[in-house]
Length: 357
Ligand code: SF4
Image (cartoon, rainbow, N blue to C red):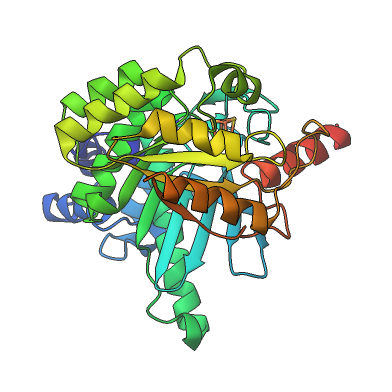
């Protein structure tokens, strides 16, 4: 059986390499190349004899996925559809924005949270990603940017600056693998942990437990509404009250000293009214946090009453929050022209496969 190298320990890989005929110094070089440098292909392990590489290929895989589709938006946002070794698919998204390039990674195949406005939730969850499958999205993005830089002089020097665990899935439901992956990315692959954010749709108990361990990453909580009934309409699986999420965010700030972000996906006529902004001000008053407004990206297949607010409405909402003392950020929609919403590229792929069966 072929196993993903990054789902094994360094000692496991060392033993396999020795077993396949690598000399001790070659086996050590392989472990270093995989875990510390992010090697994704045995072909590139040219420091190993050819026969050793061939023998290793029957047992070890370095890349956890291959890209089977991509979509590029006019603003430069690139979405990748990764096919995993069992044929399941996930997405990662690269978002260039000035000097910043943010990678949005998935933590599960699909998502069980079923937010009414999201493509990822439409087909439910299939399984958790392994830590190697999460790290692989990071490594692939890094390789992609490097290759783009060689191909296109305008892109030269563009590097990943931020990683958010905000793609398909709920990271709090796959915390062990997410943590192992982020540790690998920040410690072994030397990506600044301060530029990594875990985004959750809820799970205050897990946020509090995470806070107690003083991990170096940032936290974002998808709040969407201050009113409990309205939030439940938007996130039907939610069992916790907005005030419980705010309390967990406070515990996070008190333990880590880092301000959490509350994400609000704004939907026209649903949670974008000034009264909704006022309810947020009342809920978040005195809380060390930033609110990030995300005007909804259209996605096929969701309820017909879900629509995108105009920029003017979002601006007015942001100003109301600011005037109530809440730090607020928002950006015009990105990648809105092609399969831009989270999970949409995967959904299109899943549909086209099921239609052809
Ligand atoms: S918005 Fe996030 S939490 Fe909600 S269904 Fe989509 S992936 Fe899951």
